[in-house]
Amino acid sequence: MIEQVAKTHPGPLILTISNGCCDGTAPYLYDKALPPTNAARVLETDLVSVYITSLLKGRAALPVHYMIDAIADAASDSLSLESDFGWRLMVRMTTAGA
Image (tube, rainbow, N blue to C red; front, side, top):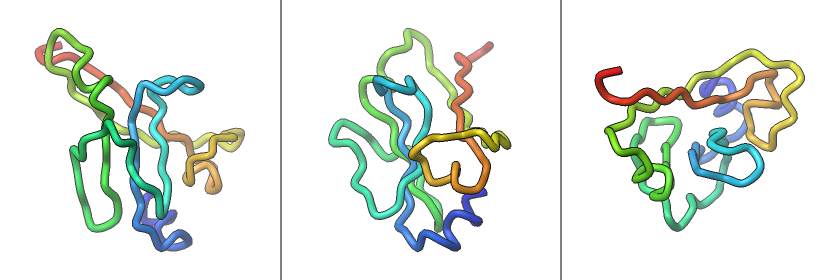
């Protein structure tokens, strides 16, 4: 899905995970955007850099593992770039040892 988006949005692509107001922790995929000022880069690939806000990163009492998933969702109306292709991003969180 990221490769599909990268073909039409030359980037650079960034994916942000925050404690946002409207969609909660829903990740957003943008091109040619700056990450939030309170975010740290947690992953960088040839196609996308992933950022998580410090507020979300430091919230859990136990270490948290994040998995970003893409779900086919033709009704997605997000401002995130994957919605143009019928996908919706979501974050799955588990605590260490769970």
